[in-house]
Image (spheres, rainbow, N blue to C red):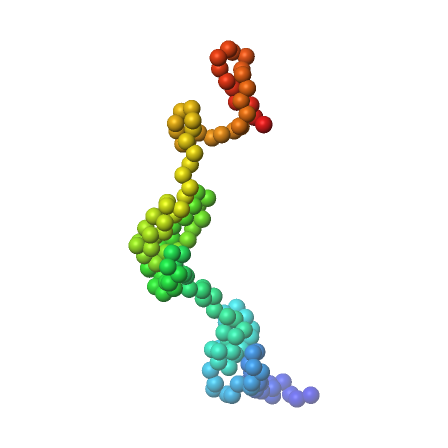
Length: 139
């Protein structure tokens, strides 16, 4: 046994890239992700093991153009359910809205009150107990 205090203060260790398994040279910059023990020889190796969370580019719902600048993005609800779609400009949003309005089929008009907000619950009618009136029967 060597006497106390004769141990070297620093032990030479080899560092190996966790991705490509290359041995890192003394003095070479090593890359490491915060909170992980893995060491990498380059940013490329680091990003291979820990890909960046880049989002896919957005596409305009109307003209299909790729929206390159996040500040150009306009998100708007396109239906009654509130489905959100991306648009590249106010012009594309307006064009989509005008096309959507022309695509909608006209709603039937109530033959009794001449209003298009009525909902038909049945197509069967029968005389009610009161003479001269009709009541709707749910089928």
